[in-house]
Image (cartoon, rainbow, N blue to C red; front, top):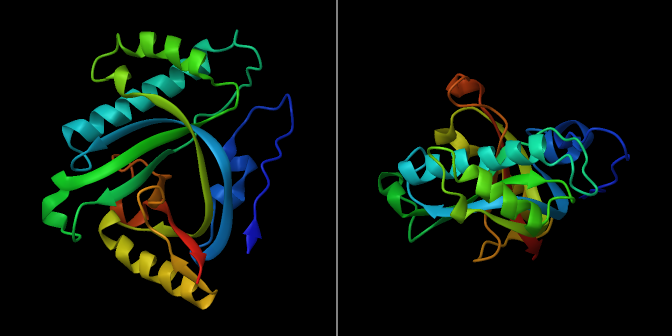
Length: 214
């Protein structure tokens, strides 16, 4: 099992994708990993990926993240950082049915450095509120302690993710774990590619499922 450490050298620009490759560059072979507590700005919603609610959430999150990056330099403890990739936690009401995506519930989020506090988020909301296509009232700041998971890199269309998820389930069972999906622990995706600029067959998405000892 891979136990991850969150040590980051001070006075260096934070780039989580480069600095913490165990979290953001996994192999296509699933592996067990203990995910540490991290800080996120997030938006909760419901509806189809690519739908109005979803697109508003994405725009709101990126607007907030770049506002903090560019205008937070006077904040105590500020550290220069690269805006991390978009992440999503997903829940589906009832049986999985791709024809009923309006019932999909999600929490979209972008990781933030520790200097981002409720006070920082408050003035960020004031700025984001003036931007079209956003809804800053939906923004929240939270600590996510994900814990034990099995993760894998998925390369290809979102429509083929089930193949990778089955590999994750098989690995969990082989390593003595069971999938632990519930209201707090959900299936997790990290989007490393821009679907508007990347061919579907080349999309890179990290897939995680929470697990516990069987």
